[in-house]
Length: 232
Image 1: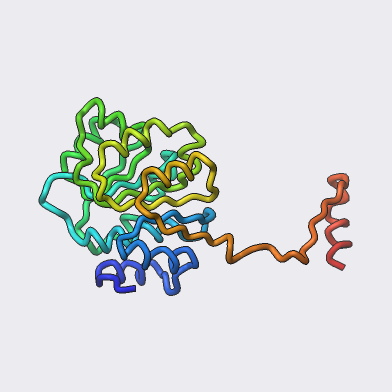
Image 2: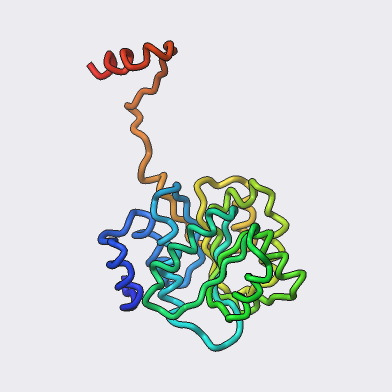
């Protein structure tokens, strides 16, 4: 895939040998600089699908002041999980990361921002708080990811997302990862992404038309017997 040595070394160290379907389809497209809308379920390897090309693009810490990449997550837990993946895959680079989520002290976050991070992983509410209250700038952002974008909109973060989009450069690359594609998300992608490449795994993994589904109503104590009956 044309990855730099530090990124490839971290991938091998983590034990990855073969890319997952979503990684195989999205990483080359993202590395070409295209905006991407990718539909993938949890557990499909989507985090690495947008973290790997991000690290490969940023390469090393920049002395120029300003965040260069943002990953937006709908929840604190997901943001922390993503941060862990970024640290693991970026362990052989000197890229600096900052996490902005609720439940963490503002003073600590101010200190992390003062270190001039290259990558920002945040929940929309906390990021907008920094933008409005502190005057934090996003003008240097060149790579923007919406992780679990359907949940971002379902959880009512539309206004925060729009506020963030107003403050980033129109020339930035945007990657949108989602399990579903609700109407709000489709409208957002059409309005705010530049000719995005749509990558859908569900079109390759349709359930066979010959498969039949059924359910049986049984008492709890009969479940095991019913299961054995079906197997036989």
